[in-house]
Length: 267
Length: 105
Image 1: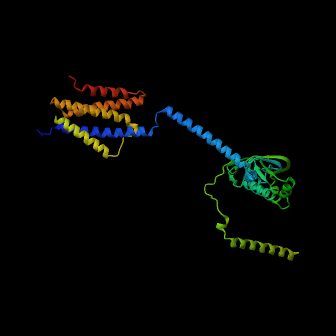
Image 2: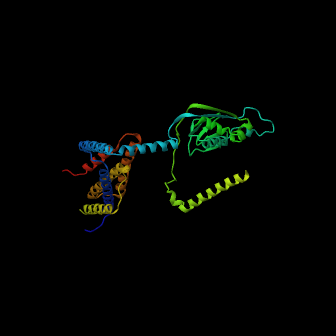
Image 3: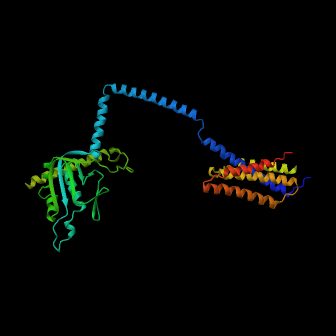
């Protein structure tokens, strides 16, 4: 009776396969049902409605709380302080478009043909011309600077890119128009100072330069990226021991005194 | 009678194996696995019937199973490529085969 036939083995094995497949499929089906949201849309809708009402009520309560806090003495002043600080920081970082009196400087390549033995490179405007001019302007007290409509901020670097000059990532082409906000007379005086950058480095090469005082200049806001991927906030005193800073101050003071004494000795 | 015992024992052992093995059919292959399950079930039942008639042959069992399962899987796959869903048709045919194996006398 216990004679094992081939058909029994084959069908037994097929049944094993069937059983395994059934379990795997069952698992997939229950997993699917578990992952899907419940299909009871009415309940979902009422749930959402309930949540919305709750959110509205909570929002109203928060509004009331904010109103009550605003009523507290000193609240308005603190808020105004923060607004003022934010405004100043945005001003400093060039995120506001600005307008006011200032200087317009137009710089162009030298128009004339150079002599045969003159390096033609000397007759072109290079990125360092712009760099130094902008630097002169900052030193002279410019409050905002733009080159060809590109706001110059703390992270702006001028680069030479073959025939072009880059301000940050923006490509500049001649004529280079520098706008600087500030006291026009003071800026002009600083730029045209005898022995200054313009007299020493621009006029001798015949580069086209015109400086005009403007009563109403517009300087656009900085439109580039402000990326701080690597920098983190640091505390000043955690990196420089206080006594070291004191040392530096002493050195500077001593140096300054030395200078004045030398000056007196020279007289 | 013995054929039922071996089949049910195999089925139970398969379920046990499936419970032990922590795997589930990936969602993307759900349709194919359904067709495969139906084909295997059909083959097992047909094998049992053949065994009862005493004319079970391995080549017919295997050949029939692979031909049917292959055709079903191919139809589902090809239907998906064509944008025509053959899956319900394949399932219906396999289910009909299963039902017609139930002896009604």
